[in-house]
Length: 212
Image 1 (cartoon, one colour):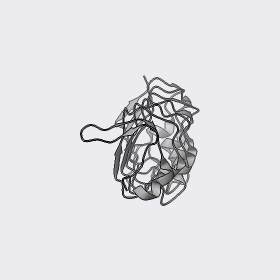
Image 2 (image 1 turned 135 degrees about the vertical axis):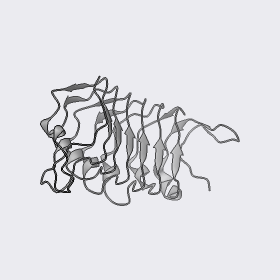
Image 3 (image 1 turned 120 degrees about the vertical axis):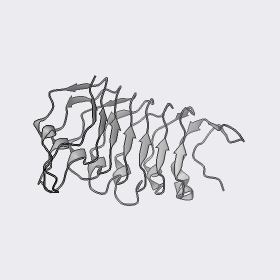
């Protein structure tokens, strides 16, 4: 049977696909081979279910410009077998609330994630220091959280390693935090020069940092 991703008023016809209703993750075990799920601007509501992480082959998930609320599931980063292949996650322009899950930064969490965009929501709290210390976001190269209600300083932990054995956020090149309530100054650890070795304490290799 065809994968069942939404409930309620669902229409699948030749030509452009128009979907409405809520995400229906209860049958995720039937869609384990799904690689790309692009559902922007489909009037989807409800919240993000922890069961979505059972889509272990999913490489790209685009749910931007819908009516998805609730919080970001901390359990999406429970370990191997949860979104192992997910490289791109776009949740921009929804109604998400709550804090960024610290668990997403722990080791083996979201190991393939390279781009995460959750701009234009109502996320709050601070930037999790654990994202720079746990080793779970080693491939994250672009992070956009513009247009939320995130406050506090830039985490010093994103620019320095705890024991000197690894670089925090070693792939991060683009960080967009416009239209939030980020305060303070650039942490000294973010300005640390690279020495080229695995033991060096280094800032993320940022090419774009936007705090307007």
